[in-house]
Length: 400
Ligand code: NDP
View 1 (tube, rainbow, N blue to C red):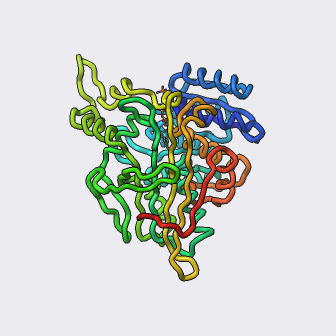
View 2: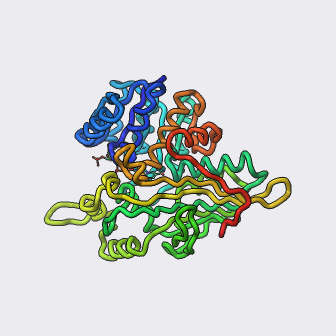
View 3: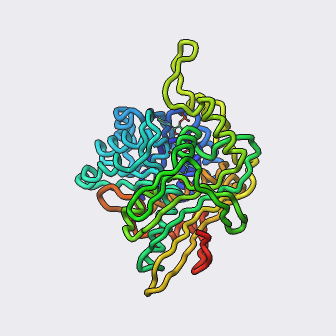
């Protein structure tokens, strides 16, 4: 049905490649490109072993529009799945516009020199993509991604108005390391160490990092201390669902993780500016990434599971209603299928599904869209078929 180019040979990229290779009736040609060609080759060899499918690999520096344009002209993909880093979103979108290629990503743009992410930079491409007749799908991982679609699905089927949204993200897994991040350490540490923020009555309320917390019960897992942090889908969800009075994002952290994080920050290793070391300029957080475990390699001994969902309160037929929709994903199941852990898996599968819906012509409209702006039903249906089944509880106690 169409040719797809995946950029980024990390943990998430590994899952995307495996999942598209499992669906070659839709993804008729598959190319994986990344900064380090040898990493693409390792993934391609594993995919060949597991599925018998041959995928093409290429080297590209996605910070360079010129390199991307040369690659897109050579390969002529219909869609690019960007699972490199948020720093590359705009260069890849620019190259897509230049070559007439459609775009999908899982994380919004973030400048390298400022730990700040927001959609404004990518939303500014709306007219250009529209004029070019191209589709850009933003935030098609799990959160953002599935959580955004869960919200759209709830609003469409179960409420007349949604008023309170709490996205709850629990990782109750154990990778056996003293400290490791579940996705790119640089992006992860930048995200979780920033000030907290949530939306209430038309305003954004800022908090100290991890200031608001409480134990929440996760299905099949039990109570876990959960912390309000700012997360990017809140920005688009409050815009696309203006009846929301409050929207928050909760994430679980273990005490061991928070202690390490505090030390890393206190000793300056989370710094994103350059420091001089032995006459060489280095960025401490990038150096830290080089010595921390690679998130994509955590899978082998990872036990336990993730549980991510949306707890929603609103009005249906004049009465208050609650709804909780969630997925639990076992790290070992993800590892057995793709060789990576659950966080990469829960991000890569939705990216594949968004790409599939695009190539099938179901999620296709010119412009730049967050995933909650598409019809949620076919996506929800595919989650059940491709490894991320969901469950729902109507009118239960939300704890929030
Ligand atoms: P990794 O660090 O494991 O992988 C990133 C890959 O991108 C690496 O292979 C890296 O190359 C490559 N890359 C980095 N810079 C460039 C560049 N300039 N040109 C070409 N390739 C480049 O990260 P993850 O797989 O954990 O995460 C990937 C993305 O997924 C991130 O944007 C992350 O924020 C997002 N994410 C989204 C989630 C969601 O639910 N929405 C959840 C988790 C992650 P090299 O190997 O050479 O370093």
